[in-house]
Length: 502
Image (cartoon, rainbow, N blue to C red; front, side, top):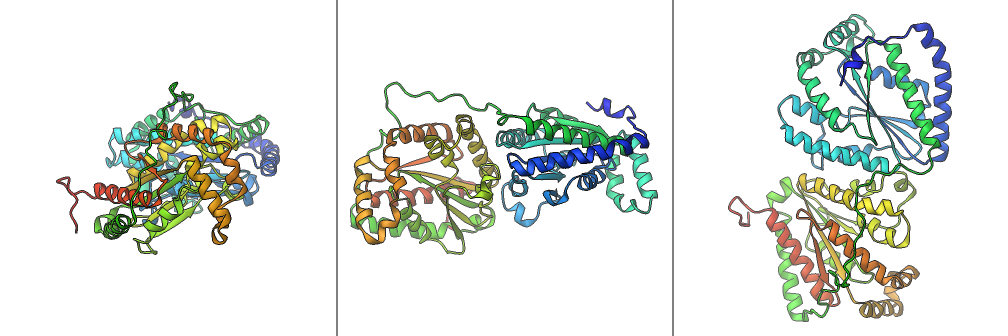
């Protein structure tokens, strides 16, 4: 895989000096066109062996382009804040908005490669991580990003000579450390692991570009031309590149579905409601203060449902059982301008709780396959691929110790109409009803179809949907609380498979 990067590629300094002014001017033109259109971001990954010119190349791109619209993200060992969240959380935070360039000095590849070389990660574990990365990069491309991945290569002798040259020059000696020479000793292992990583993640939508790092002028001009050519081609491209990730929707011919099978007549009288409400709120209060939760778990509760189905009331009953400092309620509305400039899931990643905390989402990432699908706010390829992206998102949460609990609250069309009228006629409830709510009723059947597809494609063993019969608010609130308690208890089971209070 690295043979072409060990041929001794070079260009003379005169050619370099002649080509650079034209390249810089063209890069600036492309950068300003991209900034004006704000149609896509550029994500540049700079990886490779020590001494191959990674830092010099980043500095050069800054000098050749407008640095005000470039950000460089350097990642070392994760901080305590980052460790307490899913692995990809810190990279999501760093993604550039549309119109900007983000250069990743060290990226989502760095830790798996390091852990594999040092023996902290098995081959199978690394391959699982690489599968996640492939899907992540496919999502970035589908969201419009231009992803460029550079691997700077040196032969073992070339790396040794490069390190000695850097060490000899007082201006660059600081770049060479004991760790640099330690890594030289594991050169063979790095090539083995890196070769596997590059092969597995060398995809059509985000291919690797291997550049020989021996000659500064060759490396710099090569990278500059590739960045320019890629930006120009992307600017000329009509629409976005689409990576197919989901089969089409198939509907049952007998019209039976998960919502029509619900018994919406289920009720709970006031006395039973008050008794069970107190019981499960007390239980929930104990569970979120359990040392096993506080020390290694976090909680994400997702509420979706028909308009006026009682999501807010259920959320308040959960919040009443917890310390207000321990949880955050995240209301989801139409995306802001900042959020529209980032990949769709970015605004949800940013709200994930750290260990020992909870986030309650009043509507969520499922808007893409519900309201955005039905109302035509996104394309069919967008919402079709969203099922797989959402499953990946939730899988990464669960792998990081997050307990994900998802509720769909369902009421009948008649009950919804009754509640709409009640809200309209009650002074302190009028803020709950909007013209959009009335318009959504006209698409009742379309929303039912979207909900059924959502449940079928995203109710996984790790993050199943709980469908709540919500015509009776008392019954719905208790079912929600009971489900939260049971899911928490299951997650905190001891080695004997039984929940015990601490």
